[in-house]
Image 1 (spheres, helix red, strand yellow):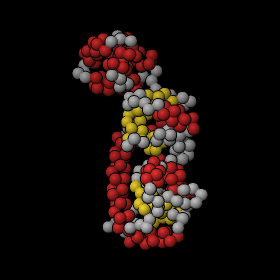
Image 2 (cartoon, rainbow, N blue to C red):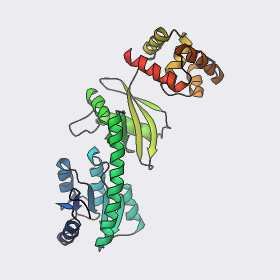
Image 3 (cartoon, one colour):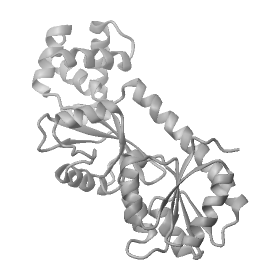
Image 4 (cartoon, helix red, strand yellow):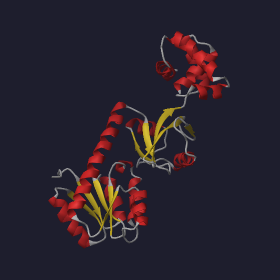
Length: 303
């Protein structure tokens, strides 16, 4: 039996469908909210976060596909599963529904038992996703996710603090057009993991780093303050009594670069980079690059 804490938003322009679904869902112990069109759904979700959404694909004015896209622009709905309902079952509409952000597709006339079973599965998956995000929130990681259009889907509280301080968020936690455009253009070039973008036009200089592409549609990124290389190199030299070249290598180790990448940046061979690393490890009293990076990052954060 479903918990009474589960809230479902039904978006359908058919009164008959709404009556039928309301009876089925209330019997399954859901709290039911109703919207007769896409605009009403957008208004409701500004103030209330449902646990799951049932969305009619074919509606006047704003169809279900556009409604879904607009709903998913709200970061608070990132983990809320949306199931499409329609009498259309051809491949084109299935693809459109999933591409718009839906997680499933059920055809009319709706089989009540099948609907509830599908909802149970997607609610369970959503809880797992929400738990993972909550763990990241608690861990204090500066992580965020974007869609291919550069729109913010989710971020840890630490990221929201940084973005607010930089003046790039409006009241609804959406990125400004300037930042959104920079991110969209960068993502269109399909950056590899580890690649970074320095965001322009901020009150505070910041980088975003590509970490992973999730399910082919959601980009996981890390946000961080930009460091001034000259200042950071000087801080590392003074703190650890390393040479200038060793400080340069240590700086890029702290930025997650491989020996090959450091060699390209500093115009030296990976073998030379490795020799510098051996001296760095001795001077820092560590045994591996992970420990060296952690110590360097701590030093630079104080610089």
